[in-house]
Length: 187
Image (tube, rainbow, N blue to C red; front, side):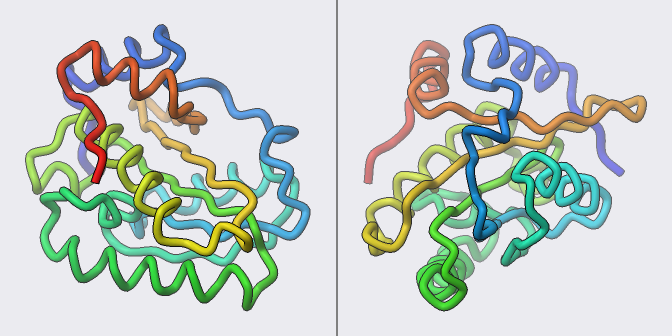
């Protein structure tokens, strides 16, 4: 199992201080019908991520779409191998699942460290930027009459059996990335 790099630990701490990553608040999720959950298929992290997600969303009804890299595959400029075709597949499945399941809430959940991100030489800032770009692409491509909310989460394994899932807030995250020279790209 891979661990956070020292640089990524600093970036996570800085993102928390900047308000880009905040504690999850289940009341804000409000997903009584469940969620369409797009996440990474990482077997070392997914069970805990899903368990925590069920607790926070106060429901166990989740339509999970899982591939290595998860939402990072949807970002238009993702350097992860096969992101273009895999991202298209995920978009089609999200678009079909929302009306089919009657679930208007989509959750994009990445995690750190991520093997797919590491293989593509992405650091935590790259992962955060790709997550924001995936959300923007999803907003542009989905029938927004069917989708009420798109939430972004990041599950961080701090090591030493300390794992935490954070809500990623778009405006503070974009400002944080901009300040560090990694602006969210608009496509």
